[in-house]
Length: 268
Length: 287
Image (tube, rainbow over all chains, first blue to last red; front, side):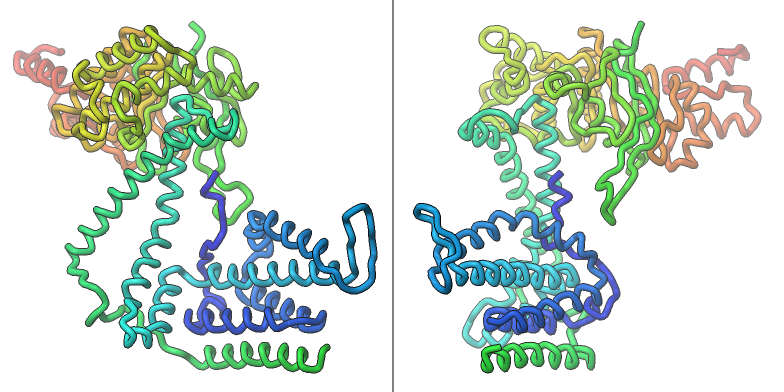
């Protein structure tokens, strides 16, 4: 069932990682990604891996849900690996057959590419697994606040994102229900050629859109009834504040980045 | 007569093997006969919806079996697919599944999937529309232009048009006004009698099931707690209240009267019967 998709799902908890300020986690993720793209050697990748595993363990995130989240990305990862394997022409020639040439450089690049994508995906998973969507949008709004001076509608963007995230599970549930209902009327989504299958989606998509618009309408009315009028003068129940733990986390994040840069510099 | 649907030791666990694992129903045994009109009651989360989705093969049992006329509905894929038209399931708020340009086309979706076409299809659509009181003038209209009650009727007609032997409805009257409620219940009864179908209706209104059904099934904590005639079930009103369910108001009134020492029967659940009993009691005879 659609419900079993764990991509980007929040696992409530009370671990150190969960308690960090969402802004800290977001910024550290950015540091982590920068470090990931600067990493060039086995040693620096090993360092990144150690960091990732440590955070996963600290956050009590089961490794099983990590691997399950990776499943939908498998094709993309394989595609990248194959592409890099065949199109990198450096190092020794390892294998030759008709138009296929595989070089040692290709193997190395493919391996690093796959590792990089895996680390990237797992890193972002860690953020969404340990941070509720509301905390995340809150953090984003606060971090982007300076852009308000440039007339960027920061609050509105954050609100839109928050609403979108909030309605993903609702819409998935709704889709499940509509699929079941049309199946009960004998709809068949699994057989036939591509065109037939695309046509079979109409009985799902039309009701889904109708209900999404209805929900949007109802939500807008409900928000107006509670006097929502944008972000000006709005106060918060939970005000984000950096604690000692956050500064420590920043230090670790910066240390990671620094280590990777140093390793790159010395070509290790 | 052999039962048309039989449920044996049915258990269903959602998201088995994940932290969200949840046992919705456990060891349910049931059988439905043709021509029965059954009310299924139970508070939210008692497993009603899970149970009814097993009866037409939308959910696969974690363990146990569902038999249709003695055959396991999961024995092969084709058979499961064909069961969906033999056992019609009307979901809660079915009007949210309408999608076609006209009511006629929407009602025809089910029978068309069964492979019916031409005059037979038109006849099916008109017959189904007749059962739910949708006139021919509405059939060419867009379902999105109808009122809420009319939409619900069109959606129910979409299932009835498959002419199932078993019709299951999940709260068919939720959110309707009194007049709409009564007429939809009347339509359901008309279909049941015309086709000699087995009808299973999930409801939260005790008055509704008491007035309509010949048999009641009460679910609690994912199992069948009671199964019997309305009078058998409503005599156990204290237990029903403990399960978080209510009994028809008139049953409560009679229970209180009996507590005050009046000699009245315990199985009163319709107003008509209650009036007869009170009249009899006034004249000093038993009803």
